[in-house]
Every structure is written in C-alpha cells, then in structure tokens.
Amino acid sequence: MKFVDIGFGNTVNTQRVIGVVSPDSLPVRRLIQDAKNINRVIDVSCGKKTRAVIITDSEHIILSAEEVNVIAERMNSQQ
Image 1 (cartoon, helix red, strand yellow):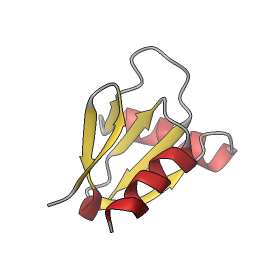
Image 2 (spheres, helix red, strand yellow; image 1 turned 120 degrees about the vertical axis):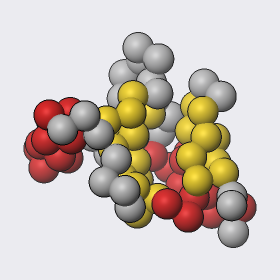
Image 3 (tube, one colour; image 1 turned 90 degrees about the vertical axis):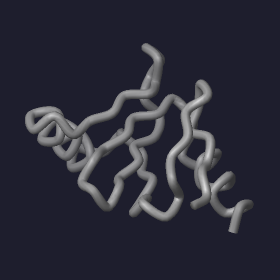
C-alpha cells in the first residue's frame, strides 16, 4: 500500500483513490451533500476552506484543505 499526505498529517491509500477534484462546481457540491446525507464524508480540512475533494472506491468523499494540484503531484511522485 502507498499512502499520500493530504494535509495536517492525514494520509490516504493511493490505490483506493478514484479521483481528486475541485469543490467549486455544482455537481461536486451535490456529490458532497449526498455523501453527507448518508454519512460518507470525511472532513480532514481542520476548519480550513475545502480546496480538494478526494473520491474513493468505497464511495467515501474526503475533503482536504490542500490544493488539487498539490495532492495530484504527490500521488504522481510516488508512482
């Protein structure tokens, strides 16, 4: 298993990640709200503004304060 830092000392298994997207679009905001309704949101932003949304294969949504390109760069550097 390979883990990547997603901010504030939190890590995620890169093999479980489907995508890393920006939270700015309306479909992503709907996805977050739907996941909140079924308790599948993990917020690791520590009260900061959400800048990246990580979608996993277990249908969990992870909210991070790191930028999308920073997380993507970290994931690519491990491969």
